[in-house]
Length: 142
Image (cartoon, rainbow, N blue to C red; front, side, top):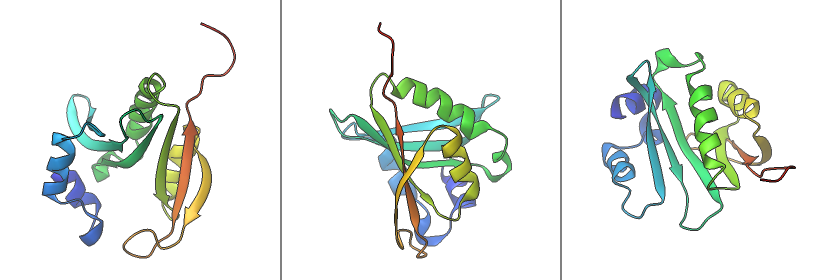
């Protein structure tokens, strides 16, 4: 996770090794951390935040090794993860850099809708888009 983080982010935007260790230890059960694999090899990670009894989950970070981006790995990972979330949550939220075209394309392809923005959200002053995906089941009965 540290290697992926160091290859992907700079300075204040980078999670420290201590922070990543905290996410993995998950002392209060509100942090879900996954290693993302491709052909059995670790190629990235994902961190999700929630609260006990909450109907929503927040994507804090999804990060892949640079050479793995654009290959559909994040899409396939998220497709499976979101399917599993449907049993536990009603919605998924995230923030994405306004300039991160590939991330916006990924999230929109999975059904996320832009619901707002936050000015100067990131340490470098870049704005963030707030996005949401409803996981509600519609129609039919079980």
